[in-house]
Image 1 (cartoon, helix red, strand yellow):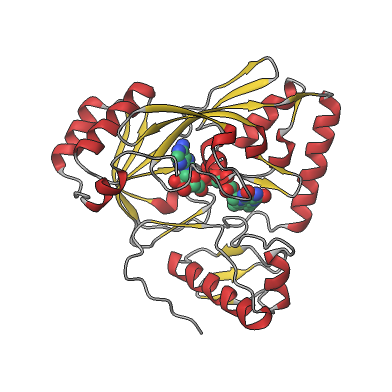
Image 2 (cartoon, rainbow, N blue to C red; image 1 turned 90 degrees about the vertical axis):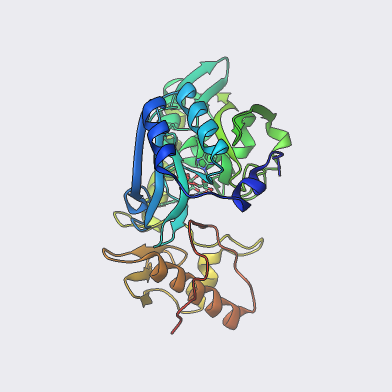
Length: 326
Ligand SMILES: Cc1cc2nc3c(=O)[nH]c(=O)nc-3n(C[C@H](O)[C@H](O)[C@H](O)COP(=O)(O)OP(=O)(O)OC[C@H]3O[C@@H](n4cnc5c(N)ncnc54)[C@H](O)[C@@H]3O)c2cc1C
């Protein structure tokens, strides 16, 4: 882990959100301050109960102000990007959720590098890079996240991951201290980084790209988009791959061979197109999805003797939650 401050103590001593804190944020933090904001509005699964506080600061000064007030009040903080890799509990999130999208989304070129704000959507960054004839980001084509979430998750595909391109990442501790780390200090590996753990705020990254032919970059993007559309469910609520692949075999193959495709629990269903995707039908709950994921995991264990690890992250108040499996 990178961190280093009193995050764990902060969470252990977590205080409820007081009306004084809400008033102070509204009075002194330019940006959005919402109370009991349903997380279903901010996640690609479209599920998740209310966050006690939902903050979208307007700029760096506002972010610093929010962090300082929350830290002093010992309120737990979680960052949210596009909500495309999280399963938020039906009970919601205790404490504050901070979102840097759509602000904090600057993209600048410096030589062959791009400096990108954490709130920028990957799709915009790839399009910008292609227009500048810079190659490297194509491997993240079609991933519906923000730069912040993608840096934390080391998002990518079988042809490469974002971590391969990271020169450095700038972030804040939850106490508001600005820090920077070189890419090779961030422990990047398959869907893993030292930025995980929820105890920092990724602000921006410097990415090392390679000059290329604009037409070749655009053609590659198009090929990868078609490949994705042909293999994955589209136009429905998912959070991408539910489980991480194993070193020698894709999780989707194991789940398919265990006969899970099309299985439903409540209003959550294993995609018939890609067995590693769970589809949340309208009215699905986070519990439906988590129950289904546990059932898939159990089926794979029974059939193949292999344990799958969740790629989708559980967020929010899951304390005491008990599974209901068929
Ligand atoms: C249809 C679909 C296809 C997908 N395909 C892929 C794929 O091919 N490859 C892949 O790797 N993933 C894929 N995903 C998963 C997901 O899109 C990626 O993990 C993405 O990088 C998550 O970004 P996000 O902004 O949505 O992060 P979120 O889901 O909002 O957050 C993910 C994690 O990052 C943290 N976080 C977010 N922003 C910050 C920040 N600024 N500072 C600190 N922490 C932060 C959150 O707290 C959380 O822990 C897919 C998802 C969907 C819905």
